[in-house]
Length: 154
Image (cartoon, rainbow, N blue to C red; front, side, top):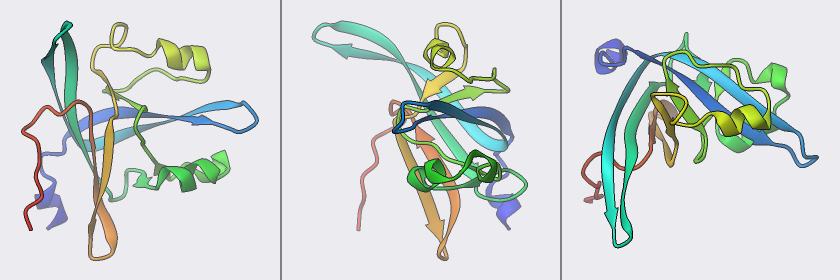
């Protein structure tokens, strides 16, 4: 049943999660996630001071093996690097690149990972882990809203 539910999850993305340690050290955890749903669209944001182009996106990552499993950012960041391998995390400010992306090891490489130099790159604004039967079934990430605003109706 789960395969049927996530049948549109056919894309591959690279997710980049920045970790800033209290001692000043920087790490960038990156994972290649296959079998995800990734849709992006360019939107023009108009304000009183002008317009600018923004890229909206939706990423849906099923929380099933063989891909890495979701972990909350604080718990993920506290693990030693070797124990993080079977997991991934994302939080606002992290980056997602469609397809297989470059390796990022330094703050300079992180700063240079921008949409102007990497087509298909987006920045995470919202992360929402969706739960079903006391377990995370999938994780949704969004940038600028590219779809109609959601309202909760109870």
